[in-house]
Length: 100
Picture 1 (cartoon, rainbow, N blue to C red):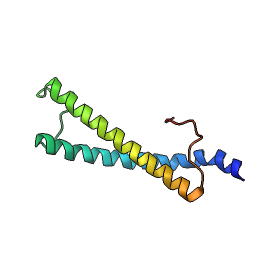
Picture 2 (picture 1 turned 180 degrees about the vertical axis):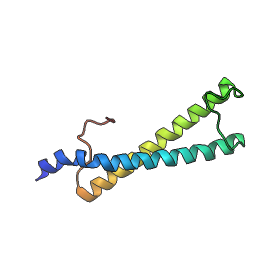
Picture 3 (picture 1 turned 45 degrees about the vertical axis):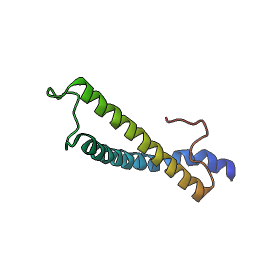
Picture 4 (picture 1 turned 90 degrees about the horizontal axis):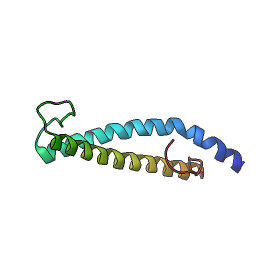
């Protein structure tokens, strides 16, 4: 039973991982908007195609957004994997590590 469970769980985890990833992305977007508002006292972060913003401001916003996104995604992925492991006794990936 253990081997079969280990082989099918990574595939079964895919939809759960998708939902968690979507929710994590939404959470990261909200966190970035709040962070930008605190840092720059502006409601909208600069967009790369905004002609009124300079390179420094655009790259700063992109770096902050990327860092927040990576941290939130890692936290959400790890929390989901730990929850699956607690409920099934099996880690939800095939053990190779990394993302697909």
